[in-house]
Length: 166
Image (cartoon, rainbow, N blue to C red):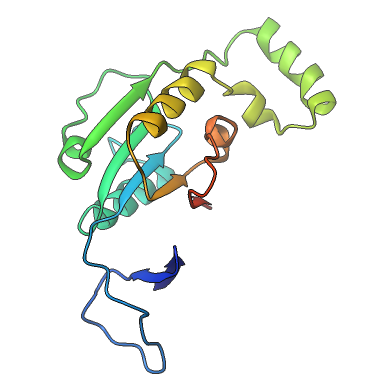
């Protein structure tokens, strides 16, 4: 699978595989710096979403420099497997979506703001500031937002490609 990024074809998981009729514009010699924003640390990889995110990170890290930004895990588990595949792991405090008062407030304000409820419940100023400081400090080639729950916090920098995971 090849993707057009910045005027060049990037990618597949097997760079030696050839595709009939598809000729890359030029070979990518430099490693892309990817800012990967997820709703949580994908470890332990025991659910479908975590498995998907973990395997995506694992395969991307073979060819690219990955910085993972995620909310802190609910349970205290070591993130050793994720540390091995990502060059940097940045954890932000998880907003507390629990509580009846907060839930009632979110249910009332979500239709007014026209935001999905999951975006309203997981909106985080801390995560937004962490992303803004990372983008200002480091030069990333791509921002990958893995979950709709953190889409509101992703800072769209001018001229910086970004994509949304499904």
